[in-house]
Image (cartoon, rainbow, N blue to C red; front, side):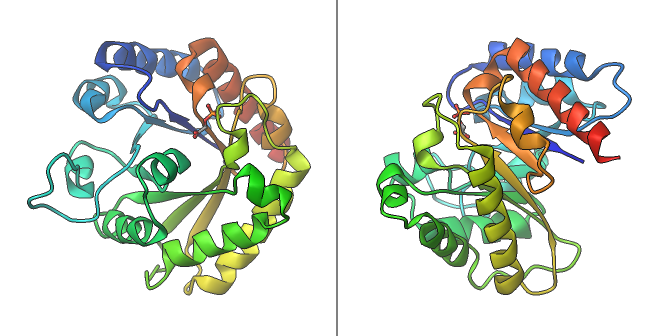
Amino acid sequence: MKTVVGNWKMKVGTRESVALARGVIMALRGKKILPEVIICPPFVAFSEVRKVVARSRVQMGAQDVFWEEEGSFTGEISPRMMSELGVTHALIGHSERRSLLNETDEMVNKKIREAKDEGLIPILCVGENQEQRAAGKDFDIVAAQLHQGLTGIRFRPKDQLYVAYEPIWAIGTGEAAHPADAVEMHSFIRKHLKEILKNNPSVKILYGGSVDGENVYSFLREPEVDGVLVGGASVKLAQFGQIINSAIEAMEGEK
Ligand code: PGA
């Protein structure tokens, strides 16, 4: 099963989110094989989007969550609040939050712990920047992000964890990673997670960074790539429809 996550970022308001969610459901209609589709609207749109996706196979993810259950944390949203709205997944540690809001690995770690405790499936985002890549440090950086993001968190065999490998230089730039490089990093991440996570929880590894309708199949046809995390192209219905179709094609190839 391939996974397609749409990260709508701060690109759409409630009205557009509702229209997009309807479009996603239309794009899945009549399909025999369905990929796992998770849409991440902005927080303000969840109550309305929820009505649209209710009784469909489309799931909802938060773009971020806070690390406490409740309390005096002005402006923050807890995993519990999200799960009350029917949200199943949460992006954690997206590079835009790490760089613009100084989110640290320690904060990421606390967020993953709380999200998981509330029954949300964390989608831990990792990836190196251009400088780190040029210096040949990409694997070390990703290993450190995995380590620090997941340290001390106990997973059980039935738990799920998603990791999104998003090289920062590829996000929103139109310059996606080479699929072979993504595959190499995915298999590194998979091996590394085997070492650091006990109990063998189920793990999915997604690629993100300038994925669009044109290049998506070159990632999804790789067995190492369990899915894609899509930003810009996920708020364009025609593109997102193509991405869903490519996921279906890749799943047909898996059989
Ligand atoms: P992009 O964003 O697809 O626009 O590159 C991906 C992301 O930030 O998750």
